[in-house]
Amino acid sequence: MTLRDETKSLLLRLGVAPDRFEGGAMASFSPVSGAQVGALTPDTAEGAAAAVERAATAFRAWRMVPAPRRGELVRLLGEELRAAKADLGRLVSIEAGKSPSEGLGEVQEMIDICDFAVGLSRQLYGLTIATERPGHRMMETWHPLGPVGVITAFNFPVAVWAWNAALALVCGDPVLWKPSEKTPLTALASMAVFARAAARFGALPEGLAQVLIGGPELGEVLVESPKVALISATGSTRMGRIVGPRVAARFGRSILELGGNNAGVVCASADLDMALRAVAFGAMGTAGQRCTTMRRLFVHESVYDALVPRLVRAYASVSIGNPLETNALVGPLIDRAAYEAMQAALTAARAAGGTVHGGSRVEFGGEGAYYVRPALVEMPAQTGPVLEETFAPILYVMRWSAFDAVIEDHNAVGAGLSSSIFTLDLREMEQFLSAAGSDCGIANVNIGTSGAEIGGAFGGEKETGGGRESGSDAWKGYMRRATNTINYSRELPLAQGVVFDI
Ligand code: NAD
Image 1 (tube, rainbow, N blue to C red):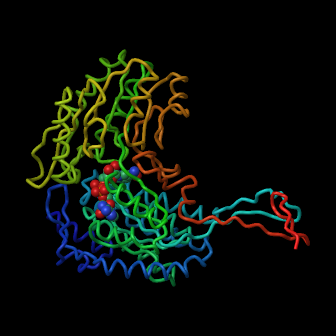
Image 2 (image 1 turned 120 degrees about the vertical axis):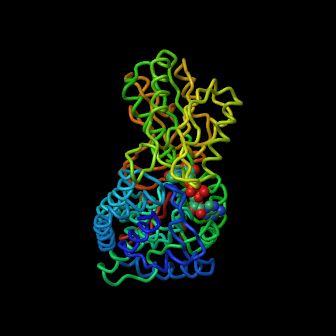
C-alpha cells in the first residue's frame, strides 16, 4: 500500500469525509518519503471571519453551562481519543515523521490532558479574602473568557491543540484552531474525533470547536479579531514577534509558546552514564525537532574527555531511518527548508571554529525526504549559531570550569524554555534551581530538557514568550478574574477610612 493510500484509509477510519482531504489545491506531504498524502481545500479569510462569529455566538451559550457539565464533554473526548489512539498516532507518524511510539505518545498526551481537565472542571476555584470593612465579604470569581484562537506548530501537530482545547472547553471558551499548514491532516482527524464526542454529549452550541485549514493568513484573522479573547500561539520566535504585538495592540490576551535554545550542564560529579543517555535522547530524539530539544551542552573540563568521545560515538552509530517501518531512533526532518537551515548553521559553526561530527544528509526514503545524521559540534565558545535555535538535530558542546560562569553562559541566549543540570552535588543542584540559577521556565535535575508531563505548567521566559499551558494553574490564562465585594451590613464604610458624607 502506498503512503497516500494508507493515509486515506486512516482518515476514513477516523471519520474524515473524503472531500476534506482529496481534490483540493493545498498539498500535504509526508516527510517520511516526501510523498504527497493529501490535497486539501483551504479555508478563506472570509470563512475564518465567519468562524469567529460562530465562536462568539457559541460563547454566549457555553459560558452558561456549568463547568462540571463542560467537563463531561472533555471526558467524552478523552474516551474517543482512547478509541482512536492507534489510528491517530499512526497518522501523526506519517504526517510529522515521528516514530510509532512518539506518534502514540502524542495521542496519549491528548488523553492525559483530557483527564486532567475533567478533574479541573470541578476545581475552578476563587479565593475568599479578608476585608478591612465590617459586615463585608470579599472574594474572587473566575469566569469564562471568550473564544480562544489556538495557533499550532508542525512538530506537535495534535497534542498542543489538546492542551489548549481541553482547558479552554472546561473553562467555558470556544476554540478556533489554526494548525500548521505542514500538518493539516492530523488536525482534520482530531476534529473528527471531537465530533464523535460532541455527538455523544448531545446538544452543543454550533461553532464550539472549529478548525481553519491554511497558512498564516488565517492565523492573522484570529490575531486581529477583537472577538478572539485569547490567542494561544505555538511556533517560532519569529512568528511570536509578529503575533504578540498585534494581539497586545488590541488589548487581547496571549499565551506565547515560542522557540527554545535549551541547554544541559554536566558537572564533575555527574552520573555520566545517565547523562549520556539523557543527552542522546534530548538532543537527537524527534530528529531535534522538539521545542525542548537539547541544543547546547556545557561539560565540566574534568569529565569532558570521559563523556564527549562517548557522545560522538553515539552520534555516529545512532540508527536513522523510516520511522514507520523500522525501529530507527532518528526519523526525517520535516522538509527541505529544515535541512538547509541545518546546513547553514553547521557552516556558520565551522566558521566560528567549531569541530563538526556528523550532520550530513543520509540518502533515504526518496528525493523529497530529508534524513540527516545528527550533528555534534565541539565549540570553543558560545558564539554565532549557538546563540540561536536551529530546528534540527545539532548539539553544540562547550567546556566549562567555573560554576558561576557556566550559569551566566547558560542564561546568555534569547530563549528561556528548558534546562537541565547533571550533578550529584547538592549545592550545584540547588543553585541551578534558585533565583540565581537557570532563567528558564523548565529547570530539571538529572533528566534531559525534553519530555515534559502534562501535570506541570509548560512554557518559558524571554524570547520563548512567557506563556504557560497545560497543568498546574495554567487554566487561569483561559478565564477572567473578577474581585467581588459584598456589603451585608447596614453601614457604608469606605475603604482606606475615606469620609464622604452627604
Ligand atoms: P512557525 O512559527 O513557522 O509556525 C507556527 C504556526 O504559526 C503555524 O500554524 C503558522 O501558520 C502560524 N503563523 C506563522 N506566521 C504567522 C502570523 N504572522 N500570524 C499568525 N500565524 C502565523 O513554526 P513551526 O516551524 O511550525 O514550528 C517550529 C517552531 O515552534 C520552533 O521554533 C519550536 O521551538 C516552536 N515550538 C514551540 C513550542 C513551545 O511550547 N514553546 C512547542 C512546539 C514548537
